[in-house]
Length: 484
Image 1 (tube, one colour):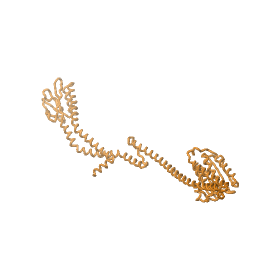
Image 2: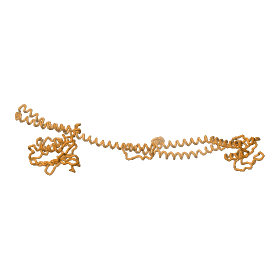
Image 3: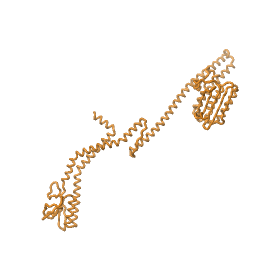
Image 4: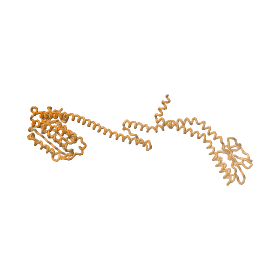
């Protein structure tokens, strides 16, 4: 069971796999090389030694063809010294004529040795192989004989076998050390890549792989770094898009909720006048009581229907704001001229004849927007200032401009609006006057339409209390308000 767990653990780690594979390859290659030495080295050495002796013997034979006996003896001396052997020169009677470094008398070998070179005997044994070369010196036949000693070759194999255990221990230790450091060095960059890849999987791109080589591992590290940067950039873009989508979804939900509330409020606002007109008409048809005076009540019904028509028209304008052609219907028009004309129209109304109007309208202020929406919003704001002021109340109107843009404000004397009511003024059908009288309190949709149109036109607005009245302001952005 323990062995199975150990094997499973090894299979799960690439460093352990590389270590054992490298160790096995080193051991197998070493054993194969050692076996090759045992098998081929003796024969190879024997062939090499024989070829070397043959080449030396050929030099002696070559000397016999061109030189005297002394030249041959000198060549034999070189042959013996170079190959560590004792060749013999025999005459036709098979008598030894010359042995290098050995004195020969009357055809017999003496024991006088002039050098430390070992002397081979003429008796060939099982461990020696005799080689003979025939030659002619001064027309006299001679034989060159030398021996190849096989015993040292068999000793090589025996020594290799005896040395095998020590060599194996050395090879195992060296293979372990080599395989360990090789696996560590090979796996180290892979482990770092694995850690970085794990962080990337958790969307953590803070760590970057060092690129220290141009090989496949270096190229892979470079590609992983590129991929991490691309993924991080894409993730940031997706997060930005997600934030925008969440904001748009929240905005859409708010708009949908506003639509539902608006539809509910509209239904309620239309229900009462429709019921009132239907009741009046039915009473006039049957000439019930005072409704027999049809002229009076037809006029009232017509006025009620006019109010309903205006309300429906306002609703249509609000619905038109979300149409696809809203952005494409922008134009550049003179805001100063429009405000001046709008003020003039309000002044012509009999009830506004005694208002104290103070104009400070900068000429030729142009704006690029949907003209109908902007004009409707400004008309509502200016009309409210006149409607909710009385007699000789003061109305101050200002339009300033600079290189950054423009800023509009209109002030009128009126009772101060409670702070808790200010934020509710832009809600649909909200009225400060709680009686529900359309004449004194309006329909409650004017400021809602104004806010909707200004927001759609990307204009800023604000209503605030002043010392003796109320001021409504409109401008392009926050920076302009502080500079004008």
